[in-house]
Length: 274
Image: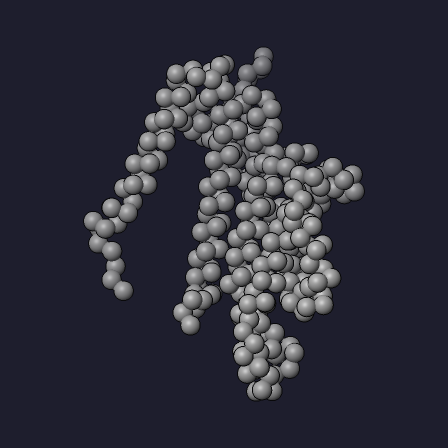
């Protein structure tokens, strides 16, 4: 496979650069034209950048006696992001530990017909609907947040695993059994490798759901947390900071999706090559 030439790379990158430049120009025009009133509701890209820099640095604050404050709400923006990533990581870890084995078990027809409707039921409920009773049950600290993120991530992982199990060819199973493999050997040598692409696809969906849920998870006592900071800054009319948080959330989600897609190519690149 030949590597692309610099000219080919430029032709690939140029449309993305032009589109981004156009969007920034349109954003700037909307911000300076006062289409939305009051004008502070439409911060310019430069104002959002200033808010981002301010959130990642120490800066003075007035109020009679000048003092130095640390980032926003006494945390740098990257610390807010790290706190949210830790919560999402825990929720996803529990979703993987529960969802993959359950999806494998649901590959047994009797178990799948019994448990499938309940997993579909959980999948159909918006995660925000859980937040009230999760806070009532587990309090306002991280336990309720991790539970909410688990409930957002668990159904797609379980259903993707089930879809992978149902797609396994019977002749593969017959062949490994003919060679003397038992139930655990069949699962380890055939079922798990065959379902890995679907599991990774379900993980991509689960990460997306977790990120769309992080603001809801951090509505109550969500600081430090990027979702909690986005909500708090919006409620305080710090719109530039809120937009900066939203951009960071989106870019982080794109980076995580790219990471999972890279892992999918490395671990399950054989799919489609049979």
